[in-house]
Image (cartoon, rainbow, N blue to C red; front, side, top):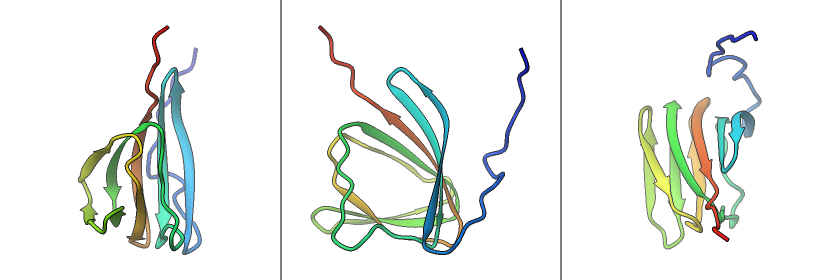
Length: 111
């Protein structure tokens, strides 16, 4: 077995207005992604409404999130938050190269 390290900062270039998604780990009910936002925003009147929990950390850069009801939250490097399922939100703006670490956790249903 070969084990090697990678850098979360490797391969982060991209065109303005785009986002790049890289799944770092997916196992069971957990998925960890690196997202790189290049001065991007969620489309006007579009909202994320996910059935799973989402933990978000801004590794590099900055972002402004907007929540249904009008609340806005500015995130800078090192800031993190947990979004419970069905928290309607959108990305209002990001810096030119904002790197996110995102953990998605699907709720398990017991039989």
